Length: 605
Image 1 (cartoon, rainbow, N blue to C red):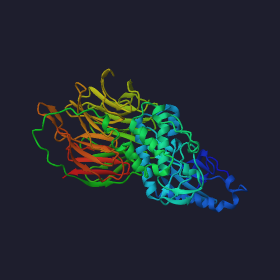
Image 2: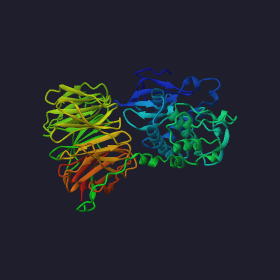
Image 3: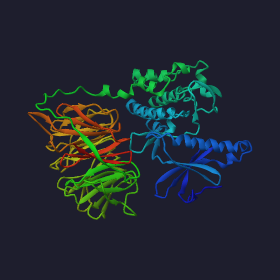
């Protein structure tokens, strides 16, 4: 059967758009489900099933394919491609997977030639966490390589794909596995039909992948190494590789399985990725001892909102504290009653909505307008009282990561993935200025309380201050060692807070650019930071005063006493990345949005 664009599958639940590619026995297609969301459908090639050499094994091929789908379906993790459903179409087994927009590490490596050690180690940690889940399920992936690791568009998120040759294993027991390998990434035991199997097989491939990412070179194959052709140490090919990482790669690629770390976690420990950014942080600036003691914070989750069908990327609270707005990967915006958590309205239905992920939302100061920015490259303004779209702003040449409206309600600032910031008139939607200066995606923008200064942070590791009236750069803050994801001003405009993928939060003095304090405690990227309005943040002869919250990919929210840098409490009810945070105007309510598809409303006890 030929599958052409427009072909309906599974009772019309999916419609094919185009073929994506094919491998030895499988073929993949791009399709849309009934909600218009993109999906990948994988099936077997009919010419393989009907080939004289394969026909006697047709039943086994189909069963192996279904087994692969089932194995993958039970491995639930943010860094593992997710299965939506499994079905048969005219006796062809099919699996439906999430569509990951972005590029694989093989293509990224071709484009950049080598990756920085910091970026590569982040991906190793993520894929290592995914492999730990896979191994606990009794499976080996057996085909880890740059081409089988996708990076989500606009994010530092690696996703492991292609489980076509994954097999069950019993640690250190001799088992019979199909001889399939990718030279350079497969260990010597994968060249053998029967051999002891263990996690160390995937350890070798993961170490070889890191070798390739940091050098731009595919390592010599295990077959050649067994002929006494030596493996070139990666540090010789790239002197910028640290001694620790160089040694961990060599250990992970030992020819003898017993000489390698026996689990992925042991190898990650050799890399030190759990603390990979610690040494990059500058020494903390000493500040005066506090003259008061903040009692331990007690926050309780009072509502969990489950109306979105995908990851929640943005949350914000209206200035009067009555409404909550959220933006999601399901392409919609929702308005909720903050007090009760009741869903009031969904914005963006039918033909007026965004056609891709809603990454950012912001209320106007009077609460009458909501702005949304999307990866469909547009910004939309909505009338809050009716849910009606007021206008669409089109000028960004790539996805919109952040929007904010000035305190007087006249200007909207937006940060884009092409490194530009744009200023717009809210009343007309007219673009009045494009600000350039960042060398990578602008991830967050924020106005000062007087509206005269705009702060921006970027994937270029920097924070910049701009004069709104002219677009002139005032100052650049450097100190983070990875992407800066979130930036916000204190109420008195003296302090700037930033959260970064280096797992750190930093406070800066706006007037001088001096780093005041670094907060450590999160074990993964800090995606959002917010100052509590009560008590107000201040910086004077008494020192720093106030409370700050941070949300992280480590699935937690932390509260901080900013005058000491002390962690007050940790909120850990979310089961996936925390993407966004917002305090209510009374400082007694906090809202969080997460990749677990929920919004949580927290109240101070």
